[in-house]
View (cartoon, rainbow, N blue to C red):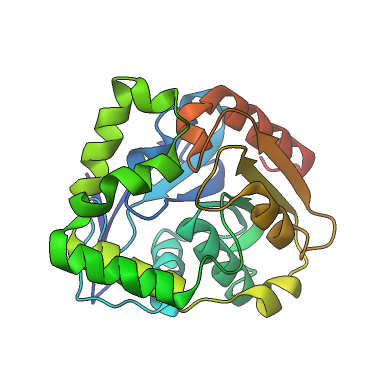
Amino acid sequence: MLMADLGDIRLHYRIDGDPDGAPVVFANSLGTDLRLWDKVLPLLPKGLKYIRYDKRGHGLSDATPAPYPMGTLVRDAERLLDHLEVRECVFVGLSIGGMIAQGLAVKRLDQVRAIVLSNTAAKIGQPQMWDDRIAAVRKGGIEALADSILERWFSKPFRETDEFHGWHNMLIRQTVEGYTGCCAAISGTDFYTPTSGLRLPCLGIAGSEDGSTPPDLVRETTDLIPGSRFELIRRAGHLPCVEQPAEYARILTAFLHEIGHG
């Protein structure tokens, strides 16, 4: 188990692939840990260095008191990559992870040479929606909202599989501080202006059944960056890397080859 002591917080991370390869970094969605990418990683090109981490308040990383500013989550990623001496990575971010990707690319182009914006947007939802969710979780725990959250995450056929129950358990076992802290970070974020100033390779990925960040929203954000590409994965919700890992890996591999990463 790898833990990075960044002073005010310890972040759990994992490295797979070639330790000397070109780096690809993965940031997870709200309510999940680094196992989000388990089914995709074995299908990606050999010879690359794959880095995953649990963001603040999730998985095995420390949970600090909520709320979290988005700048804190971006700084966590920045400091982790500095700790690991990572430069010119491809940063793959899903949902809130995609917001972190946008913020990090704006701040540290030496660390990020390309981004993958998966099931994310420059702005997600309205503050009142997030305030209501935070209040509900504070009152009844994450489990009180789990069914409605998971309906947006996964297509109906997937919700009838045995594997689905593992994702339900992962969601409800995240810390209340971590979950509500990250809800507050999303609520306070509008990256339309900074993201529209980015000039780097960008791939957008959406799921056709995504109830959290619908395809049109993902495409709108991806289109802010000139020359970006957009891909839609059918029969998948908010976490297409879980429902359609082979298709997700195919799209990501093609992008890595296209930009000459590795």
